[in-house]
Length: 488
Image (cartoon, rainbow, N blue to C red; front, side, top):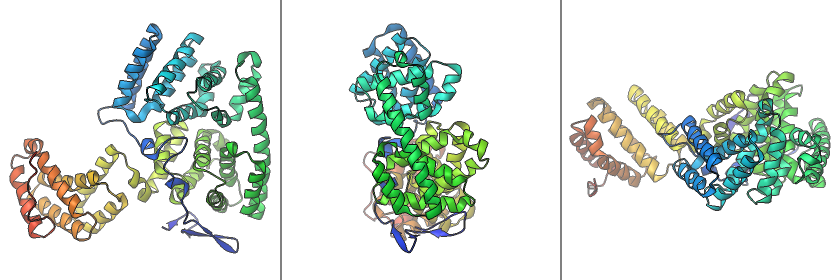
């Protein structure tokens, strides 16, 4: 699938590299459905329609305050599990709130939070991926937190070591600590971090050397354009745990090139080569992006166009399947990068509708098809509607049935003219195999199961539905033997 860049040139599944071509037909990072951040279907999770982020945060904060008073872990775990049962995609937000609250309290409260996180993990309500996202959000915002809570950096590091000690997170999460956070913790002295001061010193020294070596490698790359040389140097360094810093550095350095567009294309080519060669992983790319988003405000001091250039970069990374839409959605849910980050993420997703629409959450999907249908009723443009359906493909049976039902339902709420439009549309979609016969029938099944609610708004809904059945059968898209479901 080709896509257009700001430079005006298409970049397809084969990208020119020197005298040859780079094969992008192998599995791209975005197609790998799992990572340290979690499964893509989990990353795309949304709050239920009856919940808001503020409501969720209020409920969690209330439960935490009661827990700090009672100190009964089992009761707190039960309450938090109930919240997560209603909002299963927001375990990371719960983790952020719990640790963030503990940063402003005493050691007893911090220990209580560790016990709570451990209890939630043992209960199966809080997995390691959610905690990785929790800590990444805190890593990206620690400087802002420290403004109001000066002791926050040391407490955050102490709680990370505590989570490692009780096997809530893996110790390799230390290698994802921002260098300035590590240095701040180390500057406080060994007595403040007795658990892991030496370990932190080792990680800080390794990271500093890695960043020095890779910066030099990237300087050479922008002069030579030799992807093989960069691959070899990364392999020689053998520090794959820090390669997210390489990703962020490469993107940032592209901003300062004489021609930022050419710089972006060079870095994208490098990422494509390294990911195909299994030298860069999905996690490397994702952690690199979160760190980039978290530093946008600082980057704009030296490069006023940093946000615009980041939008362009993310747009291309989505189109090249280097990062997935669900990952970007999770970054938005966690508000990585603050207000500036949200603007960048929203703009990048608007520029990649053919990818973003395939990963819509339930609420977004309902909103999208509602808009599509109303626009169709206004324009009667079957071609445009069909194109929009293809953008949403592949549709699950459930979503396909909902689309079919919604077309008829919204038409029945309007007039006979819209009902005729709806029938023509469904016949066209079926005959052109945009929806299967099975999905069409499931849509009619769904319509009849919801008939008691429908006739409250459309009193003659039953008769109108029968007309849809008769006409669809006449058109040959609905089986003559189809019958109203028994449980309707």
